[in-house]
Image 1: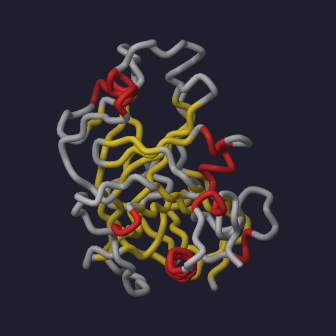
Image 2: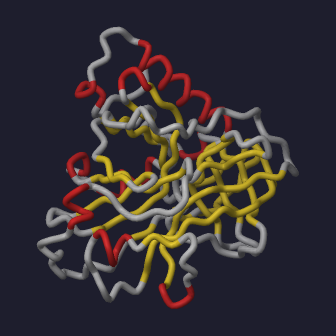
Length: 288
């Protein structure tokens, strides 16, 4: 295990300042119908935590990890720290945006409270959705080419329309929004395996391993990529984007390592194979 000593890594989480106390427009057909405009298809989506008035507050990427057509259910993974930053009461304020539809998760599962992976379950996933989940890849090696597929917030003055989702303007109704949601796929290279580091003041953070990688042509990662899948050349997921260390250039980026991802995926499979599965019992459950 490689230890980064006192290195502190920062989360890649977007704190949305767009609302700033402004009320939401009262009549919005997209929000009422639970949909938004997206012209492309992706296995990645994003989650937004809203405040008590329904205004956007926190933003992170998520991705389709598994689905169960016979139950009309799907499983998404994202970053655990999204929920830690969301604070108490987040179960009723999370929305999941995926390929033009907006879902309210029926279950939010934090299988390991110290690992930076969270599980979201939606119950009304359309059977006709033919997109297959990302399969689990082999453990990566140093030097492997990988890429991440995620969403982030970006200034509207430099956006191109092709991969831009007008979430704040059209879904939330803020006509003067300075930022919007952008989809981006970034190439990267694995730079280290089994890396441990200090996360803030958490003394237990050294117990968890990360895959370190460097994104091509990016010294600093865009906020909002937390929860994005780290994908190998075969199109399989090998990690979940977690943090960035900013005292190096180019910046070191970190994903929850392959072993941690395998444990979570095994847990998800076991969960849905249980005959006594009850949706409401999942909320707040931890992996045993």
